[in-house]
Structures are given as C-alpha cells and as structure tokens.
Image (tube, rainbow, N blue to C red):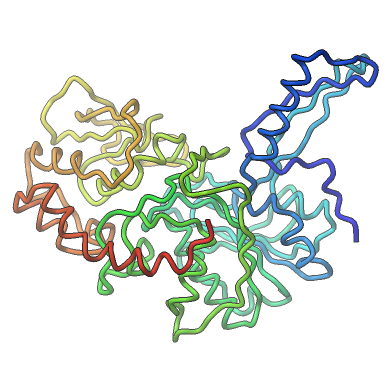
Length: 421
C-alpha cells in the first residue's frame, strides 16, 4: 500500500518555509548557498513520533484503530499557494490534526478517546467532559476524565490497536501521563496493542522536586517520581511498563514511535497550547513551579491572559503589581473572581532550569493569614506532607532541596533504563 505522505513535511509544527519555484531561472551563488543552508536546516528539524510516518502507518494497515488524542495531536502539512505566475508560487506549513491525516491515509479509525480538557482542549481543568461525536469526522468521542478515567471493555470493543498521541509538559501533576497509565492498563487487560507516538518534552531533561510517596497517590500523581521527571511521554510509557506500575503488575504490548533529530538538551516550543491555561512557552516553563499555588489560596492567573506567569491574592501584601481574575476560556469561575489580587509578574523572568520554590515561600511569608494559606490539595501536588511542613517551619529553600537529593539520585538510576534520546 502506498501512503499519501509526499505532500507532508515531517517538521516541527511552527516552522514556516517559503520556496520560490522556477525551473527556468538559474540561481546565483548567493541563492545556492541559501538553499543549501535551508535544506540542511530542514533535514535537522525535529520530527515528532506522529511525523515519523514509516514507523507506524504500516502497523495500522487493515486494522480497526482507536486513538487517544486532543488538539495537541497534530502534524505539519505542506500547503501550496499557487499563483498565475509559476515563479511566485510558494508553500507553507499548516497544522493538521492527526485524526484528519489518518483518515486521509485510509486508516480505519473507530473512536477518539479524549483526556482532561476534551478533544478540542477547551474545557476547564477538572471540568466534567461528556461523551459525544466529533462534528467534523463523525467519529464517536469517549471521555477519559471524571468517573471514566480508564476505558471500559465495552468502550474498547472492536478496537484492534490503540494509538496514543498527547503532548506532555514534563510535570508529574499534568494529567496526560495519568491518562496514559489508565489507557495502558485497559489495553493490557483487553489484549490491545498500544502505539505511543512520542513528542519532545518542552522542559527537556529537567529532573527535580520531591518524590511522590505512595500514600499520596492520586490522578495528579500516580507514580513514585519527582515533580519534574525529564522524560518524553514515550519514555515514560516504557517506565510504566518496565517498573510494572500497572494494576497487578501486568504489562502492555507497547510500541513507542520515537521522535527524530531530538535530544533532551534541545529547546522545543509547542506549536499549540497543550491546555487552555498554558498559553505559551513561558507558562509551560513556569508551570511546575507555580502549580503548587493551586494547593493554596493564591491565584496563578487563571481568569487572565497570563496564566501560570503571574501569581497573587487579596491576602498577600500590597505590591506594585496587581490583577483581577475574570471568567474566560478555560476558567469559567477562576479563583478570586472579580477580586483585586496583589503579587508578582513573572512573564519576563529568564527561563528556569529547575523546580523553583522561592515564589511559593515568598508568598507564604507575606500572606495575612498563614492558617488558611494551604489547602488539602497541596499535599497531592507535592506528593508528600513534608514540603508543607518544611515551609511552615521556615526551612530554607537550600535545605528543602537537600532533602530531595537521595530520592532524585535513586530516580535517575531508574529513569536511565528507559531513555530513548
């Protein structure tokens, strides 16, 4: 079978290339050098697992396919902008849903399984997502959030192989890796092979934070890993399987389709929002550090245009920076809705390369009522009671970080067994 991929460039989604086409015009030396340079750049561009076509399309031929994906499951398609004058014809890359692409390749998709935020990625964090039908393709959508985090046997009926394509951000409490766990478990129990299309970790190889303790296992932390795990979602799937973290130690028939031309040291900006409240690279970089505020009475900017780039509260000391949260896409009823919050604007701080605690400690020390600062969600995010106790006792950030060292050393040994890049 020939797959119609000749018109697709396997490139990072946000790259746009303009090509002048003329077979009659001879290029001068400068133009030749430019073309060679551009070609070299294109060849070295990062290719996601979804763009590694030869790795997985043959595995889907003549199979009934289920797919776990959302708005982050995209590839780059070459769009030709034809004009009446041949030499003015240009081309550019456009984002195409993997679902649409697979249908174009005559792959028999049966169902779409959507994680937190839904298939289109517009729902609030924690919002109940209902089953439905994709209006464009007519495919049924099964929600994997709320009470149905794990696909039921009847929801997997008629599926020969499952494809998983979600963009993770490298943080333990970002729930796409929890959805991965449950999908792997359901596939293992129902003898369905799982193909994970890998995507780069936008936080690279950063490994930091306290290790989750088993008693604090929840949907925002299912495994004994640090807050920043420094793995791609494909590597993480291998770890789940290899460490036998699935129910009763069962293992999934797993295939990981790797990214190409990628290493953990590379900078990777996401072509689309992974969720409504992570709007840009800055928010994704600060997410792990600021998400701790979700377990306090401090807002992380939900209900503004700078989500996870600012923090503030009516209870913090007055500062030169303030904001007032209001309902918007992804935050229908944000914390401190309509109230003036004082805090700090981090939208222009330099990229962090570790889990930062200084903002959390600063906010705690300046709050008007320390007794109401933390709520019960904090220990789930931290994966331990110790971090809250340390902050309340005034332990320095240096000492807190030292208390993580042994756990991180042990995790790094385990992590090393599953790295692909």
